Every structure is written in structure tokens, then in C-alpha cells.
Length: 151
Image (cartoon, rainbow, N blue to C red; front, top):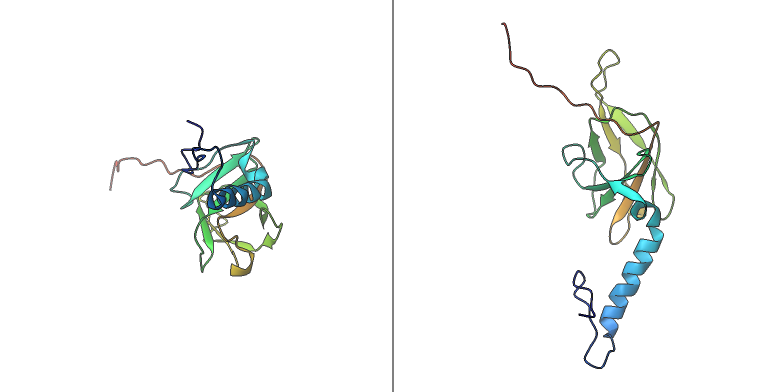
């Protein structure tokens, strides 16, 4: 009916669009153009048990994009990631981020916990997007639950 239902934006009876709605559209366009690599040409992300937030993957599944819509005061956590991380950065401004794997035992196939530092100074005012470059297509550790057969 001539408007955008998702954003609740539509023209007035005379065909014009209110200035406040134009401002919203301009801000959205600015954000999407800054983060286009994490939006266009990506596929569905990872399950919520691995990251508490929205995600997408590059078509080749070598880059994981994390969407951070709050303002965290501590590191971001990814659980169960089997891949090695080549680097992490903020999409839109390119700032490289520090990361660390904790709890990984060299003798175990169970991966550790990946912590990514996200300083307040590099966060986007709307939604910050973090890119995690992996050493290959993304793989997660899943533990197979079996019944106890003997004690």
C-alpha cells in the first residue's frame, strides 16, 4: 500500500514523506552501506547455543559475522568453535580486535571458549558487527549424549 510495513513508514495522502521518517531511512541506509559485507550475500548464522545474539555467515562459511545490538562491558563469547581464528575486526571501521581461547586442553578434542574483546570506543551507536575470519568452513563441536551402560 505504498509504504514499508517493517519500518512503519509510508507516504502522506499528498505523496510526501515526513522528515522524521526520511531521517530514519537515511540513517538505515548509512548503516547498511557501512555493513554491506555482513548483510548482502550471506547465509543463515549459527545456533544460539554457540553465540548469544544474531549471526550470519559468508557464502563460503569462512567468516562469521556477529551482530551486537547492546553495549557489552565484557568480552563476547563463542562456544564450541572447532576452527582456528585468523583474525577478528569491526565491520564498518576495520578495527582489529583481540581474542583469546580459554579452557582448551591440548589433549582433548573439545574446543575451548573463544572470547573477543569489544572496547566501548569502537562500538556502533546502533548495532556493532564483528567479523571472525576462520581457517576454513565453520565447524562446531557437538557432544553426543549416550546412556550410561555400566558404572
